[in-house]
Image 1 (cartoon, rainbow, N blue to C red):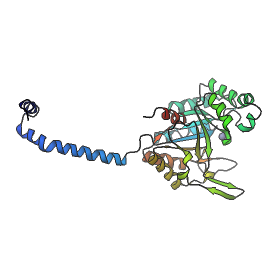
Image 2: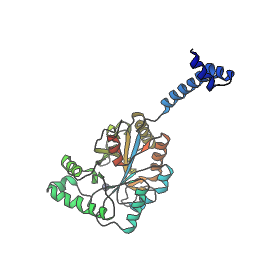
Image 3: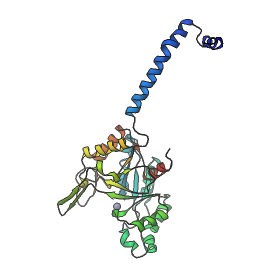
Image 4: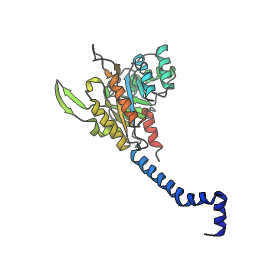
Length: 290
Ligand SMILES: [Zn+2]
């Protein structure tokens, strides 16, 4: 050791005892502890982007608004896709503004909630002026500028998609169903864990599918928990959606999800340290990857 270096070391550690301790014991110990902590963190760390994107469709603005405390409890951000066939009421605008201020996204779900493939068969112009222009005008007048779109009834084709993307929507959401029943006969059942297309891979994909979580989807808690774990393990974002918040079995044509099931999802996502994404954030996070 050079004399100069030795002097510097004595300036830092005036006590010879401390100098010895620091050199021989403390520093190696500190380094070992750091390495150990690093490897433990690595093992349990949730991948950087792993997350969940929850959305809700149609026009249940009052009902969704009552979920605010639940979203706040889990620091959750979601997307509301609004069907807007008429001007929004003052009260609805205030509620949507508050939800937006809370960090949620306000997306668009059509003016007449029509079958887009049938509407577009009469011409692109007809489709745009029937399904897009009036509702977007009402939304704009209320102060909203939706950048995400959910296909009404999950109906679309490549032409519809190209019109929507050209109209400025950054992401288009379709419907994925894990069980299909026809006239009481089960046609297929898929575990959400293996439905690859409901996981956003942050590849800037703008046409995506979300898993229906309404009560008639019959998805179990263990299936959805497995799906959440898969998102964590694969560093993807699980996409799910529902309609009206319900507190019992649907009656009189109601369609929606059980609020306690939504809470299971929020709780598990939080426990797995997943990020909550709004739909436009999915595609925007894709463009800013490292
Ligand atoms: Zn709908």
